[in-house]
Picture (cartoon, rainbow, N blue to C red):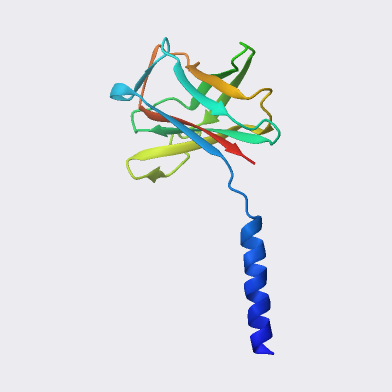
Length: 155
């Protein structure tokens, strides 16, 4: 009896592990020199999309230092394909509470904030896409921004 249960367990484990699918995850990182984002400098990243049949999630993560004094982290996001078709969207993350304290706890040296900007989105075509993020925080130079990451995760 125990021997047959053992074989059934091994068989089920093999079936479950063979059904797992490797999901595509593209990570792009931009580090800001001097922890300053100059509003005249867009962050430009690019990636190649190889599957347009499955949905994706697009996530922005920002690492901030104590010198970031704004209440919100606001940015514009543009996605452009090889044919020149562009999509623009505006996004904002709450960074400080009403008492002006950081909402997130420090992870190591930085405060890390994540925002899903698109969930279950599809790409219209295969190929190279350019992604740009622009500061819309109201100041020309914003201090305390160490790094900005963009993740594209196939669901």
